[in-house]
Image (cartoon, rainbow, N blue to C red; front, side, top):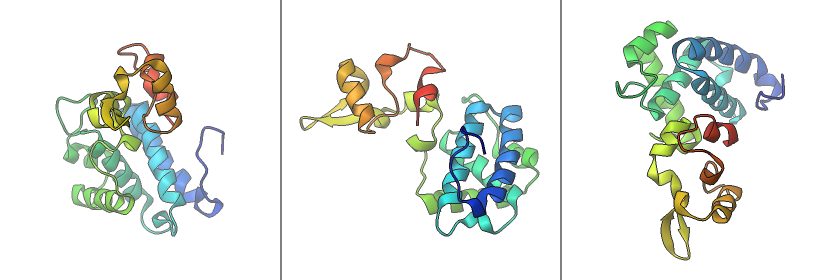
Length: 182
């Protein structure tokens, strides 16, 4: 396992490798690299869960469920989004039944408490559009962290309150947020 790969238990490494090989081929071809990275992150979290659900079941179905979850969090089925795929198209491209993929995706979301616009699995462009990610409390006031002085933005990031430091990225820079996100 290279340094870019997240840590997963030794017993789960074969399942993790198989699942991420599927998502790793699918995402760059049909979605993009950011989707691929988010799928690896979600697969690793599932592998570390005790007991890991990845120990059982068809790896293709787990991979499809993972892509479905990341797509759902980021509104992949919305035609206004780029990239965009309808759920039926996603299932067809992954070679699984739509209901099976959606059921596995819902299971994953419920198991890990993942919701729409979940900051942990949101694409950088979705984070920028989600005002709730940026709301923090300062001296009993709720403020948008993007409007704070740089020193306070850095402190908010250090405390894990924001996904990145807006002052350290150029507006509209697609490499900024995802490059510094955990």
